Length: 323
Image (cartoon, rainbow, N blue to C red):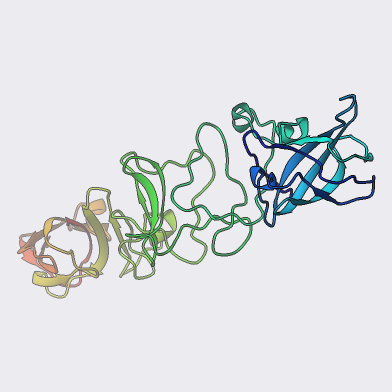
């Protein structure tokens, strides 16, 4: 990592002793060292040398340490050559092209002309990236290439996109706060090790709040007794259907395989094997009364050729609506 440049105003002096091209120490005129910066580890300042007799010879050195009037220097910087210098030759800490080139200017922050690399940088406070800029491969508290928010953040870490639009971790699960909801323009939302949960759902695998998927509906095409499905719409209305055989036809209690959370509003019952309707000889009428969230009373009456009579053993199907 390059050293940081230090600067001092009006810092100039002369050499207190001559030096050769290989010297790495310069002694300034007595008492003038305090005019110059005092670099510590990772710091330096530029010192320009110029001959006092002709003012035609120059050398730029970088000072990495100062002890009083004695400077430790790196010779022949910024394309200059190491020369021999005499007592009384001039030196000063002034701007050089090398220092200027090391500076980041305002346009560099927005025109992508530089690509800074941060080895290990701690940001205390807020880091703001605006416009179309990106923060890629940031590592906080761990793995490279993963962005971590501070888990100690009050209320849980969050990535915010606008006011009241953010994704937040509460220590157990992620919560998406968005007035506009979640939109997926292409592809699928896949829960590899779990179910997609929502207020609308279908009965399947014992989870009544699981999101409605076609695979959650049982196959009703096989015929026979006990066929069943259950579905919840986005408004919370529940529809369930079942097939069975009545015990007496006289107020049989039919228990819903999956009770409604609060109420049952409607039950529609019809014959499950309407052979009598086809021939016209034995039509059957079904009725449902005493609706509760858990069950209803089923009445079945059949035409026997001369009168209607409550009848047992009749196959029925029903659709129940509730919430």
